[in-house]
Image (cartoon, rainbow, N blue to C red; front, side, top):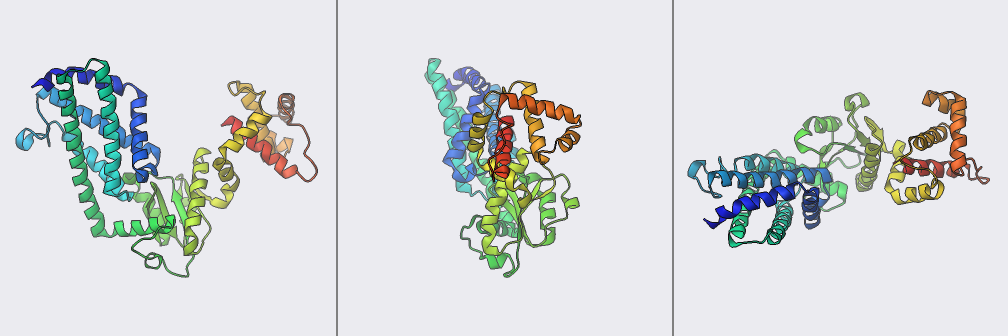
Length: 391
């Protein structure tokens, strides 16, 4: 009874915390820190699910406040169809994603518990600051009961999905692929997954949502081999990559064909190349070798910032004309320091390119010639500095 009196205050505290972006940030950080396997997934994936879980628990609490119900009450139409009705869909979506991604139930629950503890701790701190009463803590206990109900639904949904994947054999194949690409021992030897003596390309598609992965997974596996999610990314080990026209506008990074034992190293290279290609906004089928320089630059952001700070200190990143100068210089370098080619690429007159380069040289040492034998690295260092400064 006392909890009902404290509900309006708790609801006000909840709305205050929901309006604070730091609440979701802190919950996501707690989940990823407490559950390393979940932490290896793309952050936006974790963030979406944490937000959904928080929203459904809060909505259940608000519904209970209006209807006066308690978790699990109401008979056949109680928590299942009343207070926690939406939780079934949220739990099913989260269970589906984590089961497909190969996150064990224990790791999923570790993350769930971390997010729950973080959110409740924030609420308790706010309640104390507001002058907590017994009724207030009773209401908080009722809110926590909704989270326990949600946890139970999540367990049931995960086990059902895991059983389904086991019957189809998908779960075993995906576990074997993860072990193969991550270099971890699995129940299935590589020879049971792939054909010995055959060289395989490692493919990674820029697909992180398991519920939308089926068409892409079918495309990656069209050349044979095996596909599945590894650390939240859709991957494949295949002897024959799909043709570029079938990949279309989906970003897919492919390594050269390697021996089975070299696939973990190929996978690590492809992960870095994919991140670099995504940052550049690239699309389509991309070879790792064509992404060599962007991948190296993307993997060492601090060096790029050092170069930018050292060479471009007099440029203002908020000044549009300075950004235009930097982009012109990048185009000039990417076209072999040929003014005419850069002008064609930029759709301007060659004299415009020359004028911009002179203006940049007045603000930096861009016009300084390289030392003998250093022309290539000199251009790369300038390109890297300009790219890091623009980014």
